[in-house]
Length: 426
Ligand code: LLP
Image: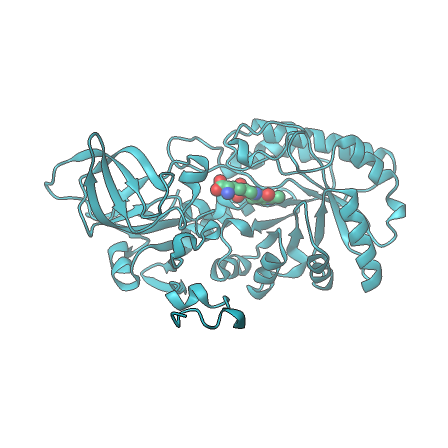
């Protein structure tokens, strides 16, 4: 569910007419709903009322500092995967004792930063990294808590690029190896092995793979218990799927209830790392139609957003619903078109052979379900300034990221002295 809908003939976010936002801030612009963001967070939080838990929002889904702050205000923690994300989380006011740090390759500087920030848990997934964390922790006189990420070898039934819990994926440590590490944990003198982490993939619409993976992890935790090794944190990762088109993902309550029997008696604090579930359907990308172009057997609607703004269709062939901001009155009903951006690649599209109400130049479209992995995956490809971001709360809207300018594009670039004469014609 979300708070984007037609009021009369105008497509709105909460009580704000999106056309007004397009006029005031220009296009392309991302628009997020405060209400949807908080509702989704609270839905999940309440669903797990039956167990001590922390929701660590996966910042990679949408890392705008205002979004992080909004969630921090609700009591949300963060799942980060880089020093940059950790910096954002802290700047947004997310409490460091609610921050978990994942990823297969943390650098020395990143590890230092996280150690000095006193985060809740390092989710680590290789012996080499454990050794490095152990070494730096010793130098800094810290004793971080570690959650080993295990690979349960479960197929999450999602796109290959975002499947992470199968044994051929780069993520996690096999159960056998993890067991060995726990048994010899004493050799890492500066680490406290307190957690188990799994994350089997993203946009998972069935509960079954979760149940399968969590069962394996729970058995593993019990096996450790049998050896006198106590696990305090069970991090079940993120990955909860949302509706883009006709998917029927489990509701938060169904998800939580189906895990209840598995988690009973475990005596662990639960960590959940949702990204898309919170922000995915809380954002749209507004884009203006530049031209409509007819070729021999196709009609192209060329818009001012492109794959640099929202790469999901190009990268994963992902479906995003696309709606005009104004319901047409008495116009020709609909036609089949490709909706494409101005970037010089044939892969730069938002929809192919899509039935769309008849549109013309200057009409504005909303690309739905763009709140997760939209702006956060955007780039400056083709030297396109990145879009603005706006947050709507009730009948008000707030600019939460200025549109980039041309000077922004070259701000960090330098022409070395040796090239000084360039441009002089000599
Ligand atoms: N935890 C870990 C360790 C992760 O790697 C991820 C996502 C999450 C949590 C959050 O997953 P979520 O709840 O958002 O599914 N760019 C892709 C998705 C990549 C997901 C990467 N890891 C997309 O646009 O579909």
